[in-house]
Image 1 (cartoon, rainbow, N blue to C red):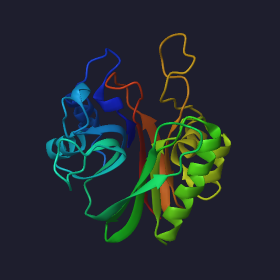
Image 2 (cartoon, one colour):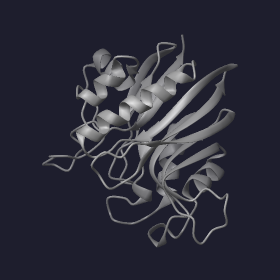
Image 3 (cartoon, rainbow, N blue to C red):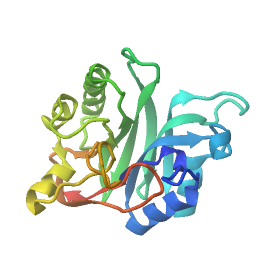
Image 4 (cartoon, helix red, strand yellow):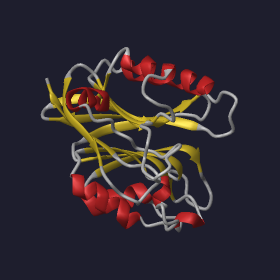
Length: 242
């Protein structure tokens, strides 16, 4: 699952991490990539450690990558800030934070890179949230691809791309890895949407959230989950090893 949780602020304006947790629990996903996560960030989320609290409640392992770190008022060494997180039912053998180059915008972005073992095989899992300008996103995807390919392992990459399928920053990834939702759409003929851009009825009308997988994985299906826990819908894919 990939899910931009908007620090757990739902469509009704309420911050409710429990709603996010219930969505994830309903799907029972093995790997969950989260974006816009507050980890001891500020008053808007009660300085909650959202990644840690979600993992604890769901019985999962977790890793956090701060795109915008926050040092005060917490002691050094505690992961604090605003950024991306990974929840995993599989063992996680370390993770790192890769800062993405800023190009003409004010907000820092990052890539979380984790090594995960599933069914006796190791993979690298990336979670990211690209920038708001196309120029910046094109720079970001080159960094993301280069860093994940360096591991020499099967790849699952999840995140909010801030653009539609077929855009240059998406095709830069699909030239190497599968877009799980696009594979599922080709099988079912149904278009998946995760975000409201120009929707007249309030329903999500575009897909800007992605799960990419290297050829070592087979895509069986993909779907979204109806929820008002965030302004994005979570995207889920059913994958297994080839």
